[in-house]
Length: 304
Image (tube, rainbow, N blue to C red; front, side, top):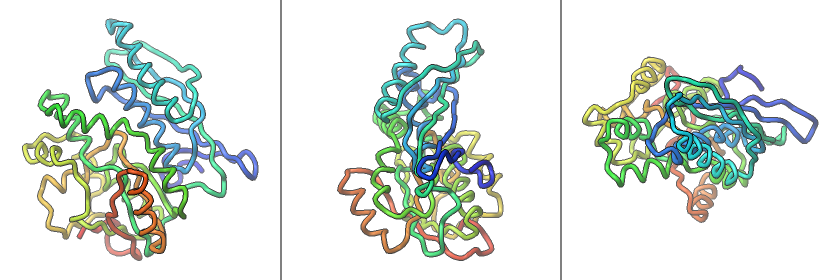
């Protein structure tokens, strides 16, 4: 698997039972605390492996460090990263560092997947039920963090969501037939949902009253605290989305909100939906049923 359907990672078959999964991601700080930044950057990069149904094995650092950044702060970033990679059951095996005017950090990650168990973003089938495993609003909360506006409770919520490994959601979903999967990151729910819809040649129907939003993110969005990526995401999706649901402007903004280390969007057969929902609840993991798929219509995304 390569770039054909804008999937989350590349897959290279080794033999009948093993395939390599390879990805990379890095970004500028979304929080001030260097340890938390390292954890979030690692969780975000590792997520692509889990979104393909794989298990992470090796991680390599990608670090851009300003000349004046204290070595102890860099060490805290690396410690946060290492702890999160080890939590995922993988190993840090080096990386590369350059000087840059602004700090940037992330990982190149390699994992394994059974070639017969690969999850793609293009395998959804008509009648599938859609689930989302993290609430929306991380882009808005990150913008509020940068403006030093967020509450302590909001900060705790944001860091907890962004640093949570999608490995745990993946392992619950592993027990079920998953037709399609992608993680919701920089293109937002709308952008990544559009990729799933177009790759699968159908329409995603999202139920507006079932979409999970972080309450404080709605409050900031209502005040106009919005990331620039939200506007570019809205422009990218354009006329391929129709909103019929009774959603506020702020709620609609959060559908386009670029997520950092967002949740998995899962498409599963209707026959497995109730049992999957129960399994997530039993595991104590967040999961919301947000819609279903239908035959391709006039738009790729319908929010009603």
